[in-house]
Length: 552
Image (cartoon, rainbow, N blue to C red):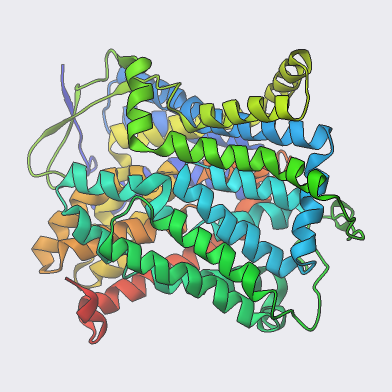
C-alpha cells in the first residue's frame, strides 16, 4: 500500500510547521541547553520524530520504523566508517611519534596560531572537502589542530567554521552534479552560478575564521595573509566553476591557496606572533589548553616519514573519488538492498514535485568504493611503512573502535532522525514555510538550503530535498531557477557547521567526548550569521543592479 505525504496535516500551515520543527528542537535543546550526551539528545529527537510522523502525519508506524532503520544504516556507511578510520590513522601516527614531528613541521612554517588555522583548517581542509567530503575534512583538520595544541573547542569549532566555502563543490562536485541530475538543472549553468556566489564568501570566511579565534585586533594584524589565502582560493574557484566544471573546483583552489600562502610567508611575517591556542574567553577550562612548546628541529628523513601517512591518505582519497575508479569498485562489490516495506511505498506530492513521485529506499553496501575504505587502506599501508606489525595494527583498530563507540551510535541516531523527517515529509513542511515568503523568497530560499544541510548533514541531500521546490518557486515568482538552485547549495554550506553529524565528527576527532553541546552553542551564531549574509547576497542578485548582471 502506497502512503502519500501530507505537508499540512493540521490544515493550518503555522501549526503544522511548529509541530514539524519539534524533533529538531528537542535534539538541539537537549544538546545545547540541557547538556545531554549527544547520543541521548539524538535518541530523544528520534523518538519525537517517530511520534510526530505516526500521530500527526499519519505515517504507518512500521514504515516510520523502517525509515529510521534505513537512516541508521546510512549513518554507519559512509559517515561512521570515515570517522572510525581517520581516528585509526591518527592513533597510529600518535603512537609512533610521527604526528609530533608533523606538528613541529607545521609549526616550522609559522609559529603563529592564526596562520596555522588558515593553512590547516581552511586550505588543507578544503582539499579534503574537494576530494572526499562527508565529514573527512573536519575529522582530519580537527585532529591535526588538537595535536598542535589548540584547545578542544578551538580545534572543533574553528574546523567547522572553516569547512563552509568549499562544501558546495565537495566530493568532486557531487552536490552540484546531483542537483542537476535529479531536478533537471543545466549542470554548467548552475555550477557557474554557484561560482558567482561562493567566491565572495571564500574571501570573507578566512577573515571570519580568524576574527572568531583571535578577535578583530588579532585579525587585522595578519590581514595580508588572510587576503592572500582567501583570494588565491576564490579566484580559482570562480574560474574553474565557470569555465571547466564542478569536479575539481575545490581541489585546484585548495592547492593554489596553500601554495600561495606558503610562498607569501617567505616574504612576509606578522610583527607579533600569536602563540595562544585557545579561544579568548570561550574555552571551558584553561587546563585543557596545551602551552606552546619550543619547536623541535627534525632531520629531512624524519619529516618525510611524518608526512608520508598523510600524503598516502591524500593519494588514496583522491583516487577513490575519481568517478571511473568508484564505478569500477562498485562493479566489483556494491550489493543493493531495497528496504522492504519502505522502497517505492511513499509518494512525494505537489507542490514539492510536479506530480506524485515515489520515493526509493535502496541501501547500497558500496563498501569498496566508500571514502572510509580508502582511509582504512591508507592507514594500513601507512602502518606498514611505519613498521607496525599486523598484531599491533589489529589491536589499534579495535581499540579505536571502542574509543569512538558512542560517536558511532550518535551518528546512527542522527541519520535515523534526518531520514525519518525526509520520508515522513516533516522536513518538507519546514521547507514550504520558507517557500511561502513572496518577494523575500531569495533570502528565505537561501535559508531553506541552510535548513536542509542542518537537518540532513549533507549539501547533496539538501539539494535532493529542496532543489525541485526551489525551481518551482522561482518559476512562480519570475526569478531565475538557476539562481535559486545555486542559492540552495550555497546557503546550505553555512548549515554544515551545525549539522549534528559534523559536530559529532569534530568532538570525536578532538576526543572531546560528550561536549557536543558546547561546540553547537559556539558555532550556531556563526552559522546563522553567514547564512543570512548569503541570503542578502542572493537577494541582491535577484533584484539589485549590478548584482543582477551575475544572473544568467
